[in-house]
Image 1 (cartoon, helix red, strand yellow):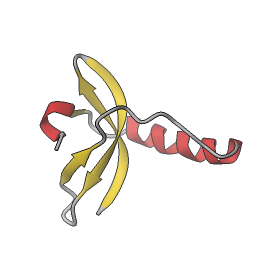
Image 2 (tube, helix red, strand yellow):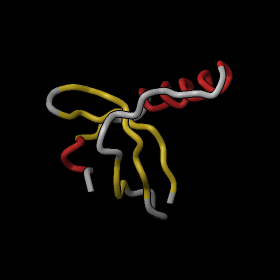
Image 3 (cartoon, one colour):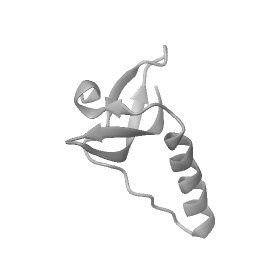
Image 4 (spheres, rainbow, N blue to C red):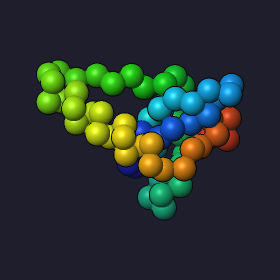
Length: 68
């Protein structure tokens, strides 16, 4: 199983969630709450923010369709 950050729409708001994929690349689960950026140091936080920016380039998912 792999994961990435994705923008999801929930209750007419957009936020970034952790999304999990099966071996075929299909979404099978997501975090219950938005995922805040966290890092051990500034470089770690920069890497995390880079993954957030990548999420902004992908299609928006509907939270209600993906929650498991």
